[in-house]
Image 1 (spheres, rainbow, N blue to C red):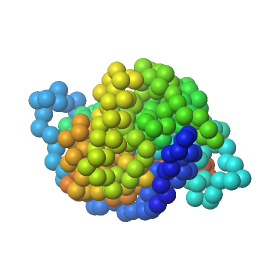
Image 2: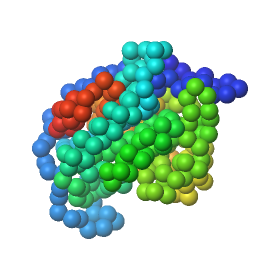
Image 3: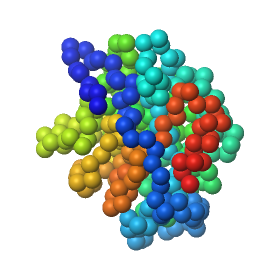
Length: 287
């Protein structure tokens, strides 16, 4: 797995930064349960009993999409890198298709309340997530989602904030604007270190300090996390709760049977997909 190298100036983030080496796996029988997403309106969550892991796993999964770079392919882009690169035109086409198909975007608090407390969601919910802080997520994704009344979740790698080079990254003012406009700012570590390789010091440098920096920028709590490369380690999952996270997101691998809130699945919208391909993938992946 490729590692990031940080020198006098930040090196470009690997195109496959957040892609897990594992392909999409078959869902468990519990995951395939066809229970409806829309349930009766529940009372306030503090009066409800939280669902256990088995109950959460049995709920119908909500489609969660993951994006990285939104730009044209370059001759230097490798074959695998193209999975994480989608052109602006295709991104806009895919978002329009989802809007035309009746999808409504949701944010992590809504998903959390649905999974843990059974609170209602829109009939066709979907979540848009963006990893790595790339500037094109602000210049292309943000206005495109806004055009269709959608909101997104931006998983920020704090080492890259404000950096410029072959790849440009969002600055603090842009991150704050996203937050002020109702999007969610969440954590993606300091410099994309593999979560499964965390040591004791990493909980400060990769988790707590990035959280504090993002909260200072936005003025809001940071309560959600996405694993670099989509990789997690089961024995470390309880510590995420200890460090203030309500839930965390992987990619398309299998959820942890004991900690489903900390292994919420996402799929990448690859740059070679048509809008029809994406819709088929959503329906196949989130049954």
